[in-house]
Every structure is written in structure tokens, then in C-alpha cells.
Length: 541
Image 1 (cartoon, rainbow, N blue to C red):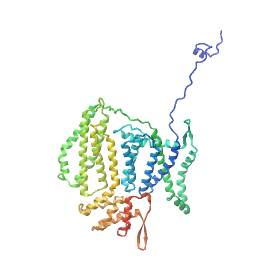
Image 2: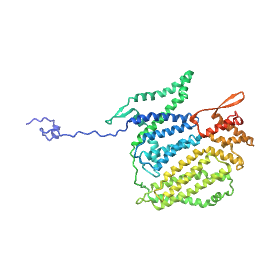
Image 3: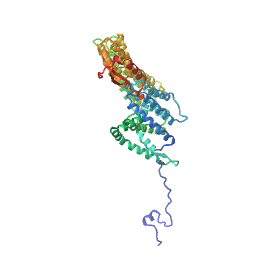
Image 4: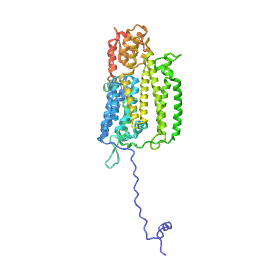
């Protein structure tokens, strides 16, 4: 019997054939794993310190100037062009919408140098945030959607690809890509890491050293033109802002998002959507029938019986604005989720959606009519201006959506964004606070308003109100004169260092180029010229 050199289990596997060799096996190729991170090239390394400096200076101009002004304009424009140069590639498709977004973004940046109204800035910053996403989606990659769902794409660009990609920027600063595709650590990475670790400690140590030694404090002030605490905070927050911008600039060009040409087909049966819209429309029909005389009298300037001007203007004002917004949401969702037959929505859904749009336009017109009556009777306020602009925006969107229901190529979302930016640009360059002061004071002086609400004027923070308030120090009403002096004194204390001399108080200009704007310059000249006629040491009431 021949000896078998293989163990019994292998004998069974090889068929008890000792002369056979084990079967040949192909070498297994390791799976190709897509690298989640990437390094930076030479262009990015040159770009990074420029963007970092601009980010630090931009944060400093917004946080430590007494209000954003020329400095905010310069550095936001600088960041825009730095990113444009870094991301520029030839043969990129240029669209009118993308060019408009760039022009509007730059106009918003310039608006900081026109007015320093903080309420307007709260509108400008979100608008710039939204426009930055539009610019990226128009120039750097193809958009997925062109309708209502494009909002989700813009939100993804601004939040996921910004806050969700900050770690990509951090990784890229410390690594470079070798010719063979592997990642290698940069020699400068250790330096950057040491600086990052030292910043939190310096935020505590440097202020303590400043408090302990006047010479050290003077040295830092001369070197940085600011306090050391301000410098360190600007570097810390500016560095975070830099990482957000840098990470997005690196990631967005690598996003492979192609435009979806296939129209979304909803999953909800048309009978459900039609029944829902019919119920809403029926309620609105009953409402219209019960309110026709009420509305027509209001439009004709005739108050309904039992109403004063204030009661009529206030009644249903907020509720109608909310109903308009809800109707817009209903129309969007209904047309998005309804099941289409051969790519077409049921005609009944289109007709009911059109009715909701027309009804909402009627409500928008009523809101604007009530605001006009309120302003004519009681004067203008910042809230009334902003509400009017919002209502105009809703009206334009409803008109665009109404046309889109029958002509699918109408870009209603682009129309909405263009309208919104134009209205905010109007609020920024016209300065809503300045408009309020100009209208109310002129209407009071001409007799159109029997009295002026000085409380409204006191709540306005823009220096653009100074040229109009300064006229009130010559008014015949002592209470109005006293309120005007207090308001002007509050603006003077913000714009001047008030020093006491043997001849009385004297204004000394506070020079901070970062906060300079046209409205402030005009106010400074008038307040300095008329200082002795209005200044009072009373605190702002």
C-alpha cells in the first residue's frame, strides 16, 4: 500500500491523489478604497495664509468696530476675490443668474460702507450667506434642481459642505499628496499644530501680563493698534472662520452632482390632493363672500362701521400674513407630492393651486393697504417697512408660481431669490432707520401728522437719522426739543470722546476707519457743528 503524504482531510479534498499539487489560486487584489481625505497642492498653500489673514481682519471688523463699516466692506470683498481666484477654472459655464448673484453679493458688501444700521445688517448677512451658496452651485458644480427642491441643495451647500467639511480643511493643511497618490505629512504641520495649541493659553496669559505691566501694554498697542485681547480673539474666531471657508473651497470642486433631468413624480394619489385643496379653497370662498364689503370699504378709504383707524389697521394684519405664507407652502407641497400621469399633473390640482395663489394675492394687497393706512395715520416704523417688503416678496412669488403652473420653464425660485435680494438691497442702501426718521419728522413738520412718536425715533440706531432729528431742536414743543437733544447726545457719545474743559464739554472725534460709513460721516459733521445747541449730559432715556 502506497503511503499517502497528505492528512486524511486533505486526501478527501484532493480525491486521494497524492501526485496532484494544491490548486493554483489567483492572488486577491486588495479592494480599492476611496480616500476620504485629500492633501493640498502648491496653489492651496499660497492661498491659505491670504485667506487666513482676510478672515481674521474680517472678523475683527465685525466684532470690534463699534459697528460694521468700511473695514467689513473691504475684507468681505477681499475674501470674495481671493476665493474667486483660487477656484477659477477655464471653460466654466457663465450664467446670468450666477453673475447676478456675484454682483448682488458685492453690493451687499459695499452696503456696510453706506449705512451702519444694525437692523439692516441682520438682513444683509443672511442674504450674503444664501448668495454664496448660489455662486458656488452656479459656477463650481451643476445644480440638481431648479424648482422648490433647489432650496435643499442650497442648504446642503451652506451647511453640510461648510460646517460638515471643516475637518477636510484641517487635514489638508497638514498633508500633501505625493506623486504616487499617497498622503505625506507637511513639515509645517507641526508648527501649525503648536500655534493652534498655544492660542487658548495665550488668551489667558497675555491679558494677565498686560494688567501687570504698563510698558508691555503700550508695546502691544503700538504693534497691533488694538488690545492684545482683541487681537487674540480675532485670531481665534478668524481662524475658525478660515477653516470653514477653506474646507468648503477644497470640497465643493470635488463634488460630483449632476443635474437631474427627470421630473420628480409624486406618490400621493390625485384624489387625496384634490380633496385637501378643495376643502381649503371652500373655506376661502366662504371667507371672501363674508368679507367683500369689509375689504372694499377699506380699499376705498371708508372704515367699516364700529372701527377706528387703529382697530381696522391692526385687525387680522398678522393673521393674513401667516395665511399667505401657509398657502405658499401648501401649493409647493401639493404640486410636489401629487402623482403625475405621463409626466403631467391633474388639471384640477393646477386650478385649485391657482385659486390659492390668487386668494393670497388678494390678502397681500389687503395687508399693503392696511400698512399704508397705518403709516398715513400714525407714521412709519421699521417693522412696517420690513413687513411691506416681505409682503411684496410674497406677492411676486405668488405671481411667478401662478405662471409656473401653466409654463414649466418659468424659474420661480430664481425670481424669488432675485426679488428678495433686490428688496434687501433697497433696505440696505436706503437705510430703513433713515426712511423712518425722514418720513415721520417731515410729516410732523408739515402738519400731516398731528404728533410725532419720539419713542420710535429713539429706537432707531442708525446715524442716518441725525440730519432729520437735528431739525427738531428748533421745534415749538419743549418736550420734542428735549427728546431730540437726548437722542443727538446719545449719537454724539458714540461718535466722539466728550472731554470737559473750562468752557464746557468738547467733542473729540473717535477715529476708527473700520466703522466708517457715509451716514456716520454726515452725522459727525452735523453733530460737531451743532454740538453746543443740543448736547446734554443726561443719560439716554
